[in-house]
Image 1 (cartoon, rainbow, N blue to C red):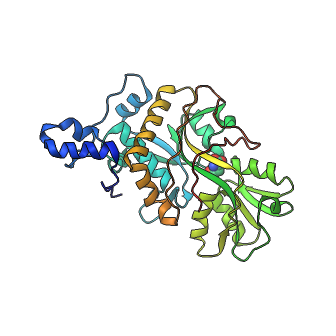
Image 2 (cartoon, rainbow, N blue to C red):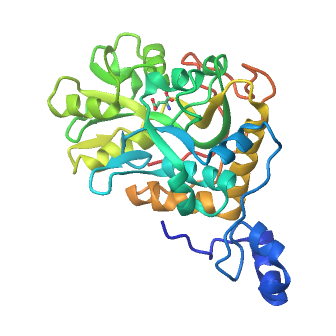
Image 3 (cartoon, rainbow, N blue to C red):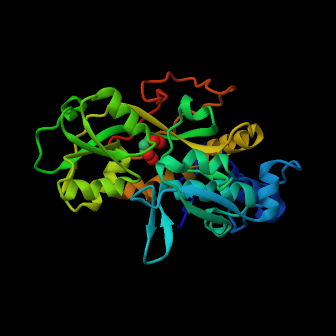
Length: 330
Ligand code: GLU
C-alpha cells in the first residue's frame, strides 16, 4: 500500500519541517523516530525492547502470527488473485508489526503469518497460543475479558440488519421476531439478537459469508451483525442486498491478546495511539473501508482498563461493552 505524507499534522508536521530545515544528515534521530515524518526515505529502526517481553521475543523470532477474518470484505478478505488477505484489520496488523520489527507497514507484511479465524475460535486461538494476536472485528467485552485481554478499541461498529433489496417488512430489530435470521456462532451478534428479538428463528453458521449465501437462496430473510461487516457484504452483492440502518448495539473492536500480558497490552495501546496521531490509522481506513463508502471517523479513545472484567463501559445483555466513541454510519 502506498502511504502518503500529507496526512502529517501538528507536532509530526513541525518535526518534519524541522528535520528538513536542519538537513537530514544533521538530525538522524528525527529521521528514524518521527513515524515516517522525514524528508528522506529513511526507514524507522526496529525499537529495542526489554528482554523477556513478548515484543522482544517476537522481534528475535522475526515473525508474528495474527488471526484475521478471510471472508469479510473491507476488514479481512482473502484475495484469490494475489493470494493475500486484505482489509482494515490486516492494515492494523501491519502497522502493529511495523512497531515491533521496524520499517513501515509494507515492510512488516513479510513478518506476519495471517491465520484464518472465525468468530467462535478467537478466544481458543489466543488461549492455546495458536496466534499471538487476533485482529478480527473482535468486540471488547467483559465476558471475553475473563479469558483474554484487549488493546484498543481501534474502531467502534454497531450491530445492524441486512435484507434483500426489495424487502420493506424489516425496519428494526423488533421486526426480526418470528423471522428466519442468520448470524455467526460465538459472536456478540448472536447474543444481542437473542436478547433483543427473543422470538427470532435463528440460523447459525461459522461465518457471515455463509449467512449471505443463505439470504441469497431464501433459507433466511435477514442477516444480522456489525454494520461495517454488512456494508462489505452489501457492496459485494451488486445491489441484491441492503442495510436496514437500524443499529441496536455498540461494538468496540479490540486487539485480542493473551490474558495477563500487560506489557504487551501497553505496547499495543501505545502503538495504536501513535498511528491514530500520525495519520496512518486514517490512511489505512481510507484505503480499505473508505473504498466501500464509509466515512473516516475520529479514532476512538483507548481503554487502558486495569482489571479483568473492569471495562469502563457498561455491559449489555450480549456482553457488549458500550462506549461513547464515534461510529461510522455506512
Ligand atoms: N464484533 C462482533 C463480535 O466480535 C461480531 C463480528 C464478528 O463475529 O466478528 O462478535
